[in-house]
Image (cartoon, helix red, strand yellow):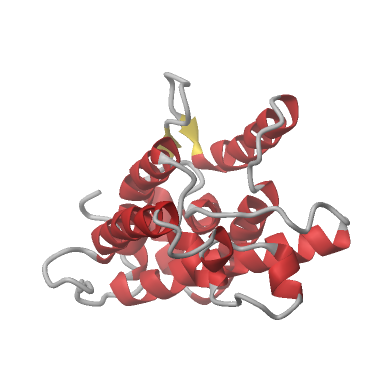
Length: 223
């Protein structure tokens, strides 16, 4: 969105020249998804090498999956839905934060979501052998941030034809996904989503406290 007030007035740069950082992340996600699918289907690697699994992490094994799991998805619809969401939500957050801090925040949210997923599995004694993949944890970090910076931003979620304010949409999406996973017995990483959301809310509170006037101006744009 043009004209969004940036908290950090930095020149936009990306890992691939003229591409925005958000576009670069989308491209990396797509390339990584294709690469991992090829390697897995060729039996050159196993799922343990790319997906995060609590039992592995708690044994000190495959620790790099905190990162690789963020760029692996469970299928075409999974990556399509996540990348479409990232295209719109991530573009806005990058304009607000600036490309460099946006990258750090995105990665931080994804890593925290993975850690939260592992710790939740341990605390609530759930299946420690459940795999988790996807950019959803990082995405919910972006959503949590926008809940505080742009609470009145109108967004469309799932198949609802009317816009809903971000402050209602964010927890609503989380609850709906949780209910779907329970009712249909679908393996959705709800605790990872929650972890990402918490990370975004914490960073949002930090920004609101440190950049009060700038955050107030951003908020006014969507009131």
